[in-house]
Length: 417
Image 1 (cartoon, rainbow, N blue to C red):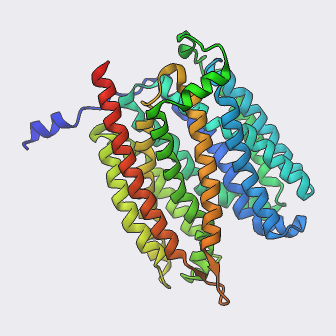
Image 2 (image 1 turned 30 degrees about the horizontal axis):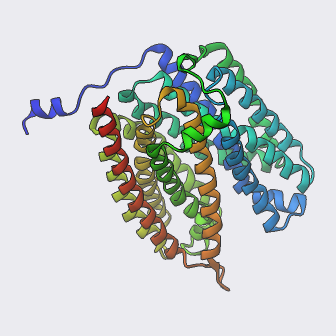
Image 3 (image 1 turned 30 degrees about the vertical axis):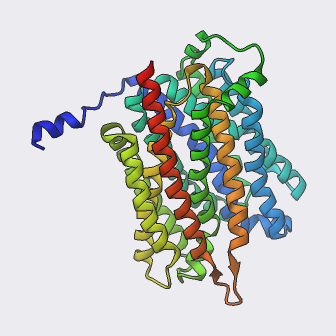
């Protein structure tokens, strides 16, 4: 293949307009705020449990209550998701999410914190799906890899900035401070969105179904939608099985001190912030499925190395963790870009809401299953963590097979229209 053929094989990428850049930045910020709220809970456990005198099982319930209420609200709102201006819908749920975050910051007992997390999940759980629906409405398929790359980078940024800042604020004042600070930033973000974002109403031109429940049912029963939902479920299991136990594994099995643990997350997050947009560009240029297959191969190798680690040095752990996350994001970003082409414009909101619901549910169930596989030994080391590695490898291979099937179905549908 000569130089000219290579240039022709990888098409030039169309640039973003100034308004498109603004929208991507706003969507990434909203994703950052929602993920940060979710991410704050786990590292705060060490502070919240003694402050509210919670048992580990009660704290586990507080963490998972968010995921399960977010899953429920995704399904409840799916039928209505395509009936409104997406900007208004976004601001409604975002307002509820900010109020829920304030409530978390003011909670003084297990009961009030649990209720606050359920409320925050009901509103916050839908925001990610509306963000994806807006990104899909406003950007053509050949730009979506880069858009999803930037939005997913918000996930990494919330790890880099969020967890250390959250721990700093709570050590400096108390565990309420990070939630109240997040709510204050959230209010500012909400004003900017309402001021700068134009209404998103193109999908309203499509004929509306009479009943929201029929709309939900019809979105659920399209065969290619079911294939996409199954792929989404498998994509979430990997992260949710490894994440809850990764800090305990790194400290107790690999021998990294608690003091050095934030460094592992910060460096990994910084790497992801830089690689996320690059993965998005690669997906737009070389094809979503190719980049996804590369991500699967890299993830499998790194998961097997990671889950079999013994005592190693801090730089080794950081390197392995960073490469593992490059693998994970090389799957998530192209998969999201490819999935965005699955629904018709009139079903986009419902499809994204159900997809988010499936993600939360499968993630919640995956961490429950992982909790039953892993055992803490008398020496505090985690046992059977390697078993989780094998489960994640199996789910990764299955997700590759499903996404390949989905790509073939989409190609066939495109050829028929």
